[in-house]
Structure formats: C-alpha cells, structure tokens
Length: 407
Image (cartoon, rainbow, N blue to C red; front, side, top):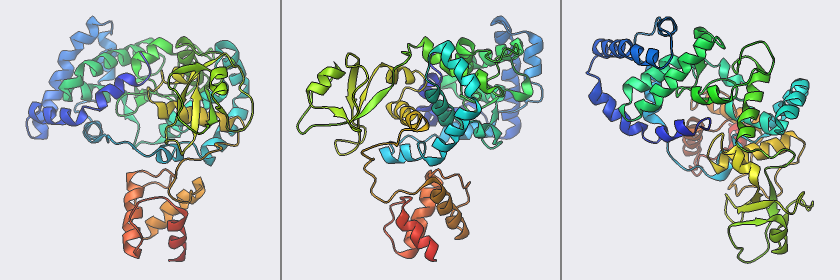
C-alpha cells in the first residue's frame, strides 16, 4: 500500500461522513464521550485478536476519553478544489525550500551517501519528499497540526462509519508499532488522518517500509533523519525506482499537434521535442509520456518511469512533478525555462512573508507568516484589494505588495 493513497481515498467522502456522525452521536458531550469510551472498550478485543497485547492497548488509550474534535473538524472541512498550477507549485517549490534543502544535503551528506548506495534512490528526490511532507521536519514541531495518532485513528474509526474500516486497520497497525518499541505512546504523533513522522507514513505503510538506518534498534521516522529518509528510499525502491535515472525532463514543443501515449525519447526527439535547456536527453531508449499541466502555453514535460514511482508516495501528477522540480533545484538546476502561466508578478518567499505581515498589520490576516498562500491569505488579500479599490483576485502579487508598502 502506498503511503497516503488510502488516506486520500477516504478524505473525499468526509463531508458526507460528518452527516453520518451527527446521526450516530446523540447531542451533548456527555453522551458523545460515553459512546466513544464504550467504543474504545469494545475495540480492545478486536485489537487483541489482531495481535496487540492488552497491556499495550491499555497504555495507548490511557487518558483518551473522548474523540478529538480537531480531527472531526478536519475530516468535515477538507477542501476539494483544483488549484491553478502556479498556486500549487509556488507554495512548494520556492527559494526557501531549495535553500533549506541544500543545507540539509550538506548536513546529512554522510547518511545520504549511505542511503543512496544502499537503495539506489537519488538523494535530492528524498530531500524534496522530506520538504513536501513535513517542511524538513518543521511541521512536527507544531502543536496545532500534530495529533496523537491513536486518538486520531480511534476518532475516525468511531466517528466516520463510511471509512471506519480504514481507520480501524490503521489503528491496529499503530498499536503494533507501539508494541515493537520503535516509539512510545507520548511520541506517536501524526497528522489528523494518521500520517506519521518526518516523511509522513500511515501505520500500515510504516510497517511495510520502515528502516532502522542508524542502527540503534528502532525504526524511528519521527526523530531519526537517517531512518526517515531511508524509509522513503525503501518505498521508492520497492515500487521500482530505477537507479541512476531522472524522473523526467522539461521540454520545448514544436508547433502543431503531437501524438499521445508512451514513446522513447528518441521518438519524441524525432517529432521535434527537445529539452528546454537545450541539453541532450540522457538515454534515448527510455520511454516517456508527455504532460502539459498548465496547458500548451505553460511548461511541458516528458515523464519517464521514475515519475510514476514517485506517485507511489502520493498518486497525483502535481505532487510527483513538484518533487521532481524541487529535487532538481536542490541539486543545482536553475529552475523552469518556461514558467507557469501566472497572471501576476511573482513574489519571492520572503516577500510572501512580508505580504502576510503587512496584511496582519491592517487587521486582515491572523495566520502564520509562513510564506504559504492558502485560503486565509487569499481572503485577506481580497479584503485589502476591496478596501483600496483593486480587482479582488486574491493573487499574492508584487502589485498588491507595493500597495501595502505605500500605505
């Protein structure tokens, strides 16, 4: 099972599940808590039958007497929309994620050397995944994001009848992780849906891929960077990563319509498709598929086998492309030749933080100054644009920042 695909399958129905939750749980916290405690008591036999010791179960649930309301809220309000390409990539592939990735490449070089030698997976891909999954571990320091994994999964198993099977399976797996001693109850933390550690593995994927790279007897993807990166490498290797090969190439397209399907790089080249940076393809016998995520006017790519392998981590083209592009820039690439079709002047990461700070000074934004432009930032931008008479598009543009600097 891939790291988060199973979790992704149930997030699409969470809104419907919230209605079922309302029907399942009587009004009033006293009833809800009693119902949850009864569920925890009854699930103990299931966990024990699945190989979890009663003592481990009891320790894991000590002090957990009610469902996590944050988990239920996250489950209910998960957004479902298609963001423009530039919006997705600007929040993930930017100067800070590249700079920190290069710092981490230097800091962890001895371990990356060993991981690369053992698994054959490119170090820069691993660093990019680490960035995408937890911002190089910074997310794990945030109490507003990290949840108790046992409580989160029990909450979903109890409160989401439509997807309780997934959560129950993951809960038993999480309890078995505790049973191995790889991590203790107080440190078994993860996302609201149960993804864990520096590289965000759901419990069953952890069981399948986790590696004790540092040799201390524990597969600790929370605190050991070598273990976390090696675990990600193990997943990619077992899903068919081809050592020594890239994920794909940015390309320039000839005029006219091109055929679809998979072709060798030599065949694409014969059709007039060349690398955007004018360098030669590395291996003309590799098969590749053409993708234009931002339409014909945006950047175009030929994706080879390793691109599909990255999707074993998260089955989305945008995710795999962001990993590939970020990895290339961490490795020293100058970035895209043809930029995204962005309808405004792009800000640097520091300028995006400045934008958030200035919006906060106007009383329009109360989130973190993290340079990531989410719904809160966009709403604040639109409010400011309305206030000063600009078009209310919510874009994090240089034009808006210049207005903010003047006021």
